[in-house]
Image (cartoon, rainbow, N blue to C red):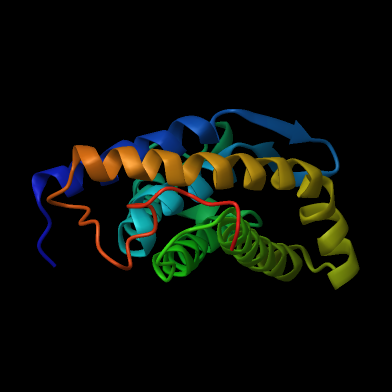
Length: 199
């Protein structure tokens, strides 16, 4: 898969974004999963870059962290993080970015409703995979895994989903204008036309 310089720059820039936002975290005493802005970075990246490049950003982020660079939340790094109780969320980032991008790419004219549906699908995937690995490694019941790994974060996730839905299309439009050769505005590009409130 050949990529141009601008595409590689976009991927590097958004990888840096998620690495930075991952450090804005609030540890919770009852859960190994801190509150962070990681998922907002995932949402925003997928909305702006689409499925292929959005997923590539998340793969690169996971690879860099696994290689020992402290890009995971709270400055953590290494393969044990991916294989530990919180690793399922990071794997979820990859699939969620691809799903969000695909849903948005299917819109001839993007809408706030489609954006919200895409992001809600993405956050569901992240938390399902995260809860699954948490349950497996800590030998929890489904209810315990939900209470520990999902429930405390729902209100904040809804705020992040709403912000990303509003901002994602507007920023993608600007990126399309800045990099027309790598983000071609065609019938399936989600934001080459203005966002509409009606679906």
